[in-house]
Image (cartoon, rainbow, N blue to C red; front, side, top):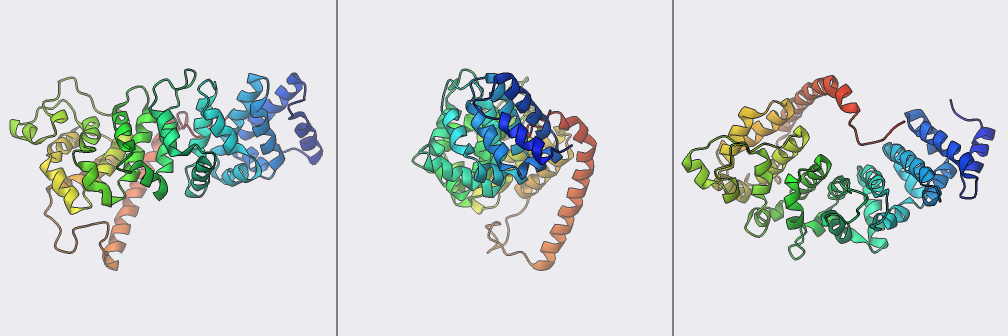
Length: 379
């Protein structure tokens, strides 16, 4: 049930720093409840004063009040239609970013979640990237905090992973991450096997995948300077014994793996790893290196093991390129090839069918996953 104008004004009058804590506590609790469902979020979209009040109260004296405000802001930021109101009507970004930089800040993880939610879509992602520059924080500082184990003793900061992945949608962010002088990508690579957090691992793999759309960097990424391949293949490799010849052709880190070697547990991350490898096959130089480094035996064994239909599909696409003939002249860079219209329509049709199959399967598992979704905390 939505509030009348009178009730809304009364509630708003309690949402100030000066209000008595017990009264204010009831008010913020009510707001959290409101943000726990789509109707409540929609209602608050047209109430910029409430959004401003929530951001102001993140600096309240009471930790309980601050927690309520962040809880509400996480729920609101999970709704894409609230991204622009949150940015335009409140001064939320400088507040969040300054607190994120504080190594003592207890609720930094909630900030990471809000920033990760806000950067999902390109428009707001650009706004966040711009404010990072304006606040003289920049991507360098975000990467430094992300890569500094224990930067904040009271928060894990794992959700900086998805934030980086989202920012890597932007060419400017990719340009920074792929700068040959900065060694940013080399600092991120070890996290493809970070055991403590699926969120952090997935965020880094997503970042790498987004960066690999810039095919001009493929040779550098696959070469000795970055040597990205072992970091993408190791999570997909299992304990299966390969022939001596197959082992010898692999990068050293992938040769003769132990019997207790396990694969990446998360199917979404496995799929992203395969998609990243697939992007490397778009260029002739990428295909040549992948074939010379014996990627095929790893993917072949992986295909026998994999159970998830979406991941199997991604694996099959990769295997087809790895064992297929080279494209004819003029078609070497698959990212630049003009696809004839009839072929494009056929591909779209196949994609739509595959998508339909995937959606049907997703529906079945949706109930299971709903409880694990990081988008909003709901109430």
